[in-house]
Length: 321
Image (tube, rainbow, N blue to C red):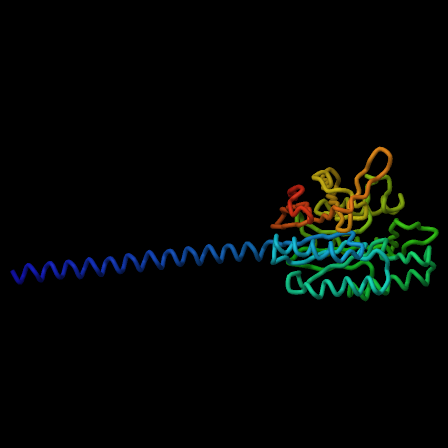
């Protein structure tokens, strides 16, 4: 009888030990799986480039704040924010101060890296009329102080991707007009050099210019010879995605054009939208739009966002093979 009890006790102890070992292995296995999944997710997030492009703020602080809040609700961990020109409605100090203050107040919810590009309105002062050379330099200096750049055209690298900003070197002059951009031969030469820098086939290159190439609402952003030269340069790089603003046209999926030697994407406008009509254009001041972009390797997902309705307008993937 004692021997039988001992055998039962041994069996129980062995069963308990095996159960503990099994449970321990299951728990450790699950922990390792979860840890690996977490590491894989973190690795994927680290490899994914994410940014927003806001064009044509025109100094509208209220709408900029709304756009910042909405973008943050979408993604609180973006790599950069691009302000694509017409940051202010006029290149006057008070408007720049208000813009800088808004960005500073939101420093905890916006990316540390902000790329600030120049537009045609950044050359405006309604009280002065058209600009003389001295006026042009005055507006450029204010922009450079705001942007923290040394030139109206500049570039940077983020997570191995090249961001190239083009910019008009003058604005609102009698010869040029109030809306067109002017890119010098120095800037074109610089662009050629930068496009070839660390070039990798099928790796997206992001180029930004405030002014548009097409004439979707009756005007172009560049003179014919300038537009041709820019198109010729960019056409050598199918990896280029050119982001332009300026027209304020309402966003739709056709604003991302992939039927060119390179891709173009219209950014929408934060301040207000424009809707073409038979008898002209209609300004829609209740609209506010922009782009959110995710990049993974050779795949670029471009999503149009309505900041007022807080909903997506379109989503389009661009893949480079």
